[in-house]
Length: 273
Image (tube, rainbow, N blue to C red):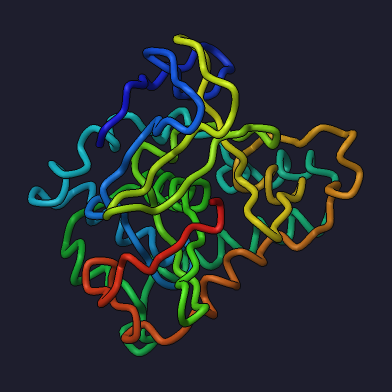
């Protein structure tokens, strides 16, 4: 990774964030992430939980992602609706969102109690073997995948692929941010399209892509923040499982086994450009 930024350790109640270590000029690249460390996955975020835990516990793979894994919030400080008791869940005061959380919980339980006849995408037995992993860590991995994945578009086929982008996923959302993500020369780059960034300023970008608005239900369930109430059109258009369903309907697993087996990775284009 090439970047003159630092990840800000969170203070009490504050989210992690990325700060500029120096000033950046218009059109300058802020961060550059090689495609070789991007993590594509198929199916739902719950299914990809097994893949993430494999990367975390496999000695050969964990070194490649050590700095990213160390920077992630741990199970003890990951705030997510999926891990709270039903009594607390009622604080959402939205039956549709409560149902969506329960559905996500059930999907994760089904994935973790896999049946070989179900044709799972990522086999727990193959990737994790007999390793004993606590349920808290399973929930943590599911929440990491849910809150830190991009949906990418294949330029020619129009297919979509979900990708985890280590380190770029530390950048916080700002709908008005001038920064954009692009793919160029084998790397994903965060580029500044504004008037300049001062040293010490927080780096942000918009989680919305072309033709996609970040809904309040999605923001609350996946990222645990609420959008400004002035964004009236975005308030609770409840469709909370739409992104997961879209990932699950992307196609047959054997057609896109993995990022590193892709025939033409240079034709992956980000919807956030």
